Image (cartoon, rainbow, N blue to C red; front, side):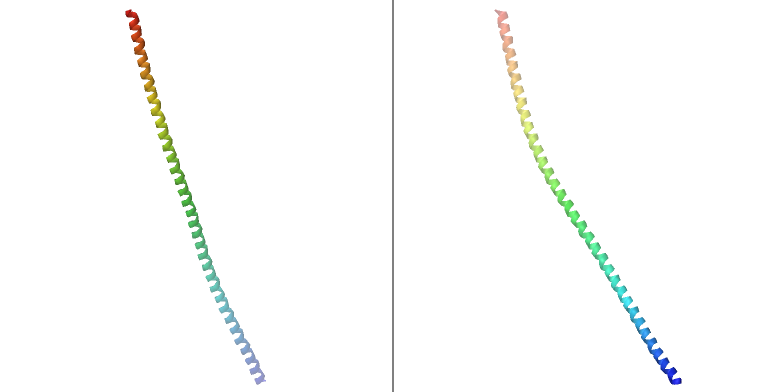
Length: 123
């Protein structure tokens, strides 16, 4: 009976030891899985941050390109405006010269008419 009791005790101790070993292994596996999940979360956060940074840089470069394009268009428009102003200034000068010439002719004609009237009155 004592021997049977010792055998049962040995079997129970063996199963208890195996149970503890299994529980310890499960605990280690859970910790290992937890470390892996933590590392994956860290990598995911890092990847997300890199992705957002890349996206921001890409948007910035697009805005910079748009700004450059708008500046180029503005320079072209300023050049065209300057050319138009020069052309209009030239036309204005021509018109002023023409007006001056016409006024000179009118003055000359008025003097001639006055001279003729004076000659007619003298005769």
